[in-house]
Image (cartoon, rainbow, N blue to C red; front, top):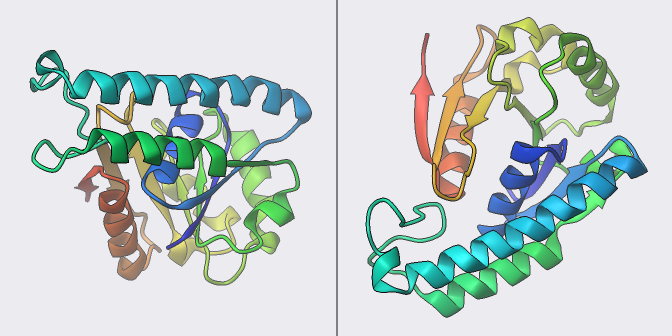
Length: 208
């Protein structure tokens, strides 16, 4: 996977996008309106500063304790402050915001839906998205309260649809819960487990 699209630029959507970009992926955030851009860009600006502050703290004795170390940013044994700061700049400058859904997902390897917990809105999103995605695209939801089985039939690719749920403050609370639904092909479950590791998460497979 190389091209990642995050649908939704809220608190977690913006964090997921920034973390994936920090880890070297090409990331686009799809947003519904110009107003969404004005709400999302400040979140990205803030995340850049948070990552920089966290990395600078990690370079001090006070920042090298289990309670302060950000495992989503670097491993303790291989931490390189300058390299991490360089990754932050590259992530921030490389993130793209896009209002055209078709353009956003035209070459997507993975689409991460991170929208509000509203059933009707999610269904409408999936129905609009379904004909626009390339055959290769895997689709996941970051929903924290709604089961993926509730939406699989609306995605147009139930075999490539599952949950990938993150915790807030992703750079520090670096866990990702991966849960399939009955029609998910195990191949894509494994791909998402691998992707979670590649963005420095600890993947937690959920089988029930």
